[in-house]
Image (cartoon, rainbow, N blue to C red; front, side, top):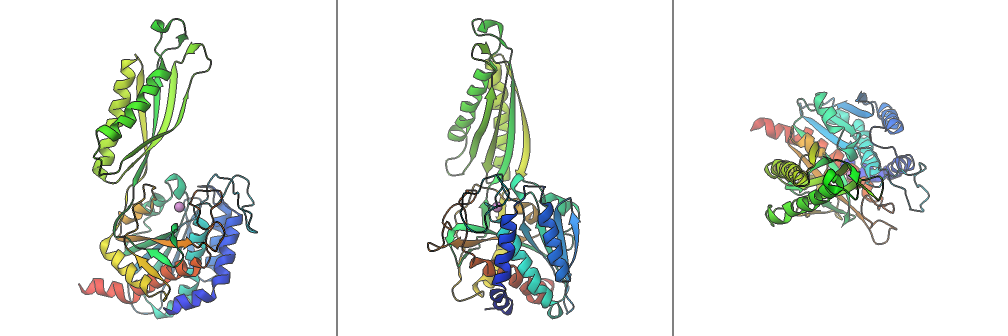
Length: 399
Ligand code: NI
């Protein structure tokens, strides 16, 4: 077990306290005002310089006093979800309708823990650690602001982690290649012509046209995409009409696509545009599709994954590293960072049958975790950064 991990085991009380503090004060995407302030206060205590990125993002920069020139970036997302907590723990959300149900409270605490111990060790390494506390992951924002601000300039590696209630506590998933799908959002507006229900020939039924579009979109997945390449087209919101006896003149729907390659991502967009426009025409209506890209697919660099795996295996005797966690069609815009710098996203097991609610899935009002995973998460952040600055960066430069 590395020295930093041993120290972090001793810091468990700090990690749990911070995690529960964030958990009790969850804040929605782009509204992480208190969270950002607490992060800054902690970085200040550790003597780590920091600045804001956007309104609620925080960047900490720790320069080592020893030899070496590497730069490693560590990322944690910090936002919560618009979801009511149904747990009955002593540290439940104090904000009605908002909850850290995706574990970003734990990510933030782990990265602060790593910052704390790395700051103590700053004489033993050279180069630089950049701590990225990213807001708004849940709405596909935040990451790009850091990239645009030049935060990754000169960085050799980027590393992040996410809790995984599908893995037992003590297990860490470090899977090279594809981990998460690309995510897009679409909104389809259908324009028809309103009329009395008794005279359909005088109007264009937008509700009927929109219903046909929903069906046509599902047909794309079963009839046009390969059954061995996962694609999802989901419509989650649909509205039309104002009264029972009028033909609706407009309709609107919103949905999301999940794809695993950039080619299929663009292809599916094109198919949906065509299906919506042409299907609407059959009913004498028109359709317009507006797209918002949420995140590209999350693909772990094979070299960085191998490095993280080696470091994770050294975290302790009870740690088990797996490299074949099944892909998820949920997205995470950590992927944006990996497009710029070779990176790896690890999954930290938090399930324990003896810990209440820790087997529940993410984005669930009953989600909780085995907090014994916190020193491991913090340890992985810290040990990987230290390994990179002491060993990895030199190997890269000697190549
Ligand atoms: Ni999340």
